[in-house]
Length: 250
Image 1 (cartoon, one colour):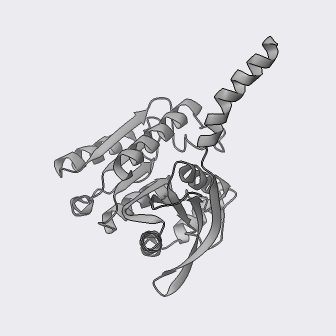
Image 2: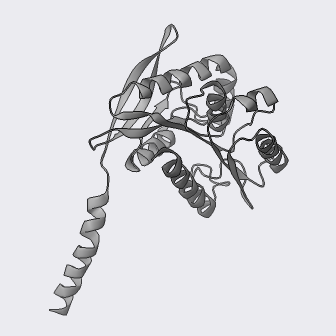
């Protein structure tokens, strides 16, 4: 009898939690980007009403399974999440190929694709067009900031260890509040650059929140980075992102 009661209590605990899980629908979508047609991976909460939305921006590897997973995770948090395919169907499997693809991607086309993704989301009936943000990692982190520079309607921006603008004119164009997650051991995006960007944003009266994780290097949030992944820092960075977007977009 005691065992049965324990099982019943466990069910009472689990069922409400399971009931809170948000199911997600995913699909590949196409949208116009200038004279071209771009595509992306769309993850949507399977619930009625209008939702906040996010442009989810790939690392230099391309639109791979990890980026798609991030889009689904944000959809589970209640966001319509669109990850544009900036490489037009190509995905890198080694650093040399990733380097080649990233160098071969025209920067102006990438920004145009991101603005087109923003427009695609804002036109959807299930999206609150005034509550659209962006998030990216590595190359995508820098592009998240570039979207903030070029899209004044962006309502929130997250950069994870991405390149930051240094031109005061570009920083002056940023209207969205910015959250940044960086690694103290990142040789490509050193803390000195992060601090300089924060100071420039403060001087321009822009909203910015930055955290630099001790013992973490570049791409510390991605478990596929076997030697550089830092589980505790990654979990904290995810928590910060969700809380930031909930505060700014919900």
